[in-house]
Length: 264
Image (tube, rainbow, N blue to C red; front, side, top):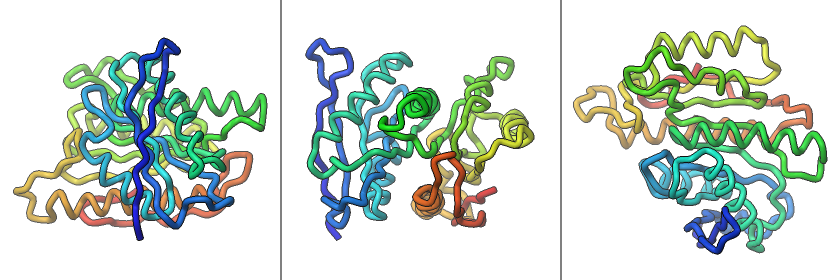
């Protein structure tokens, strides 16, 4: 199977300044009328569209039938990044290969995860007012920054609590932006609220904020864990293909172990 990359340009400000973007898509997905679902994958505050795991995550998702849209956002400002994300999705849909897309899975790493949450809320509100608008089906949060390193009294758990869609969180157990007990407490609060959608956590054992596992780990290497993460994420995306308009997953892959990680 061949994977194609299409360059796009996103214009978030309407002032002529354009941002570099990419659409990654497989040959079997192109021009299929039933291909109405795509992924938006956003990078962290200090990176770009190729940063960290984003290239291989995009390639794998595309290979599994999910076109992926990325954009390099030059400012960490939340409102700017929201505009950049909207512009990237709009630019992607101008491609013939993406013309049928009406549903999205929103993903982001670190700061990009925060933008994905805000974007999901905004898009869902717009769709509730007008069902012809694009519909967000779920979110995947890589290394959500629950707090800045060492600042354990200044939590961003309210952002997690605001979620109204199926949620898959990938987190390294050594992540200094997410102390274990504070993260577990935030997830428990979400689940105790009895939200009508799944909240799934995939722990990368020994992983840091970049989801890198020490090479000294006797269990696996980073390469093997990479396979576990992307397999778990892809299973979640597949489950979202079977979803009704109320936002309830009709079928969900069971949780289990994957390489050096666990899904719970």
